[in-house]
Length: 377
Image 1 (cartoon, rainbow, N blue to C red):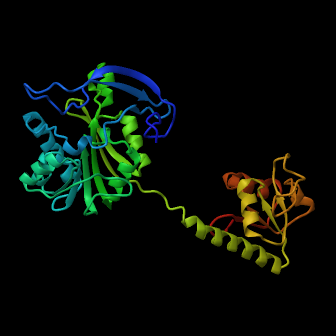
Image 2 (cartoon, one colour; image 1 turned 180 degrees about the vertical axis):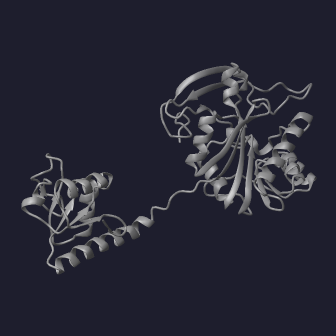
Image 3 (spheres, rainbow, N blue to C red; image 1 turned 90 degrees about the vertical axis):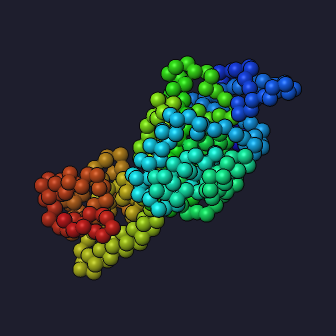
């Protein structure tokens, strides 16, 4: 996908909102004293999608930028306390004691230690060799590499995943999140933490824009990113004095449309058998409703033997139904061309039609309401 396309929804072109002409190319790299000052500033362009709202940088870091990346925050007592409390709450709320949790982008392994202290069995995944060395020194299992749609976390499935301060670096947002989803069990959980773009906007903090932070999330765009990857956000808050957005997620449960395949067979069979039974007893049958539901059912069921289709809409009266080719007649037809049974397909108007049949038209025959099985009124 082009850098000028939204990484979240694919919209293009994007609107340029901010241009910073001179920023460090690598904010994790400080220069050695007395060494050659060979670094060169880069220009940042912040783009924003007017469709979904995601803000992103136009340019991305070089391909192997993170192979030697090193930026730690575990020296800070405030950060250590924040991470310990966060890990303990996440483990407790999701019943992760004694269960394997993968931290994707685990850095120096400090948060792995927080998870372990809370009772989980943590495993790390980290592309930076320098970070992996630090994780090994802490005694934790750690894999090299990245997560993508086609490459979930090694050693899956896990009971949960954690990815903190990572999503803002990812070019393939939906692929990365899909890979996380595929890395956990069906009832698993996840914790996603990113810098808060609200904090940036609320306080005019242009200095929050870094070359390696290619995505900038608000509550809305973080939630949208998760939902598009099949992750339901169960809780979303601001943490660390409003600096971070923290989302707890789980597998989104989608209704399985496959069940409609069985409904086709059941409904069509029930309708055909009802009409055939009525006809075998010498009874005449009509349908009520020339709307979408009725037209679809009559065409799909291929039922023979219906006399006509009743509808109150004068624009439909006098015409033929598509595929099934039945006459559409007004309700008054029941008086001079009576039938013994009616199949009601206009479900939204069920009570109105039944009342019209019984009270206004004096119909005393059988009314069968369309459904998985026909309901006899």
